[in-house]
Length: 600
Image (cartoon, rainbow, N blue to C red):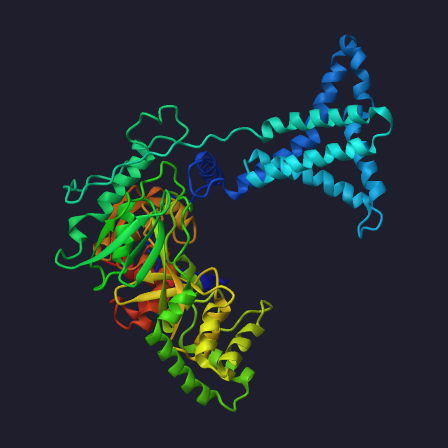
């Protein structure tokens, strides 16, 4: 980048405080502190972090390869005359060769007819043992099962390949080595007990919102010895914080409008609910979170969700992970499509018109033309993946349900542009469109496309005038095909996530790109959003140490970094013109977004 370009890029950026840039020592200390916090946060939803898994696995392999044999050998030789009688064990690593030599001999004699040489089998066997042992140390259940089978197979090979009467002694020694290595591998992992909090009785008075600036001071570490008796543990903090966030009077829905849901708890943190013909399921931190999420499905939008629990509602988990026990997802999408007679008829009628327009055209050429048109008029927004800000604390939860979505509202398709799949099955879009255009029975064809081979999964992000969607874990090719074809709606499993309990500026924003480490713009953006009436919440700290406890926001992508906020807002403005009330220039790029938001 030239100096002129860099200068232009800096135009419009908010002024910094003039503090000196952090030195290498500051950066190193900050990174070390962040890694240490990740390593000790054993109750976090993302624990263990990937770097810790790799480090432990590498250390385990190193221990096996470099420590066990040299230490045993060193101890035997260092004992001198007092253990001279045992020196035969150390000669040529006899203690190991009793096991290793027969295994290698067995593989050499039984590799005939296999497509790989015996030496490859030998090294595969060795590496498999090291990996299984390392994963056992991380308490992976599947690895522990594999380690049992691995020990049994090794002992069997030693017994089979050891000649003479010593085979059973060699097998016994093999078992002894396996038992010794299994002691750390099968160490117990004590889970923290679950704290059950009673649900607030109907009509109970809700305490006024209090200061929420010190949750970290009232939390008790999950591994603390005083955890059993401490009243201010994590579950109590999370439950109390969520009650303050959800039941604040200043953003409560109208009392005279209510939608009644009937709900049942299906697991420790999972539930299912229905209201008329609508059925949802979800995983939530507690019953209040379920009510908050159900309110997002209410009609009129935001109406109070009255939930009648036929069981005790889910209770705030002691640990930060939500349990998927009992969570089965929404009912069958196939039944949902077949029961949606009006929506299915609308899709079939639209398909009939589309078949007439596409008749006689070259299919591949017209697909390319339609995709190019969409890329100009309704481009995908890659940054939509960051629509919902993330948190190091437990996520309040999410709900899933079946619904018909407007294809015009899909702004994230797991690709950078429409019909751009590179080598990832690019022909599937054409096959889907061809089937819909040529099928003898359009009703059957539409139902099969929507429900066969799984179904489309969408993430929904609610805004002031309507929702946005992005493709989730399945349905990418299907969504692209139906959008290119021009169908107005499609059936999908839709998921809505709740706002996090608390958002950390460092984990959400990082360093450098949007401001220096001492005066990052996250907290200033949060304050500006709150001043403009776009956010309700408590902000504590400043710079990279700032934290936000959001009660409500007009749009969740406002809480992301400036690039995401600007890009998604521009897409929302295209679909719902004027709904956000934000100047068009502010949505043209991250620097323009910052300049508008932070202007006084």
